[in-house]
Image 1 (tube, rainbow, N blue to C red):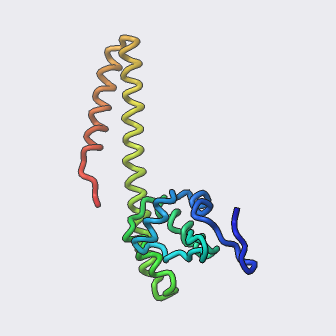
Image 2 (image 1 turned 180 degrees about the horizontal axis):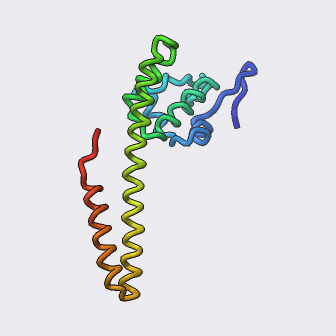
Amino acid sequence: MNIQKDNIKHYTIKEVSKLSGLPESTLRYYETIGLIDSINRDSSSKHRVYSEDDLNIVIAVACLNATGMSIEDIRAYLGNRSLGRDAAKEQIKILENQEHHLEKEAHYLKLRRQYVTIKIEYWKAVDSKDKKKIEDMKEKAKSIAKKLKLPKEK
C-alpha cells in the first residue's frame, strides 16, 4: 500500500519492486552504484520511501534493462535526459546501438530455433526409419551449426 504525504504518493521498496519488476536487491544495488539517485528515507523507520518521480525513473531503468542494455549505456542515457535537445544525437546513438544489438540477438535466436526444428525432424525421421530424411536433416543441422559458430560481432 502506498503512503500519502502532503497529497503526494510514496512507495515502499517492496511496492517499487513489484511495479517495476526489479528485485529489491537490484534496486538497492542500482542506488549503491548511482544508477538511480539516492532514495529518501523515512525519518523514523529509515526505510526507503520512493516518490512518484523515483518510481518513474526506476520503471525507465527496468525497461532499458529489459532490452539488455548495459549499465554503462543506461547510465549515459539517464545522464543525458536533462540535456534535452543537446543530447538528442547521443540518445539516438545509444538507442540505435541497442536496436542493432537486439536485431543480432533475434537473428541468432531464429537460427537456434531452426536448429531445434531440424533436430525434431531428424528424430522423427529416425523414428520412422526414413534414411533419406535422416541424411537431409543431418546436412541441414550442420549448415545451421556452422552459422551459429560464426564469430558474433560486438
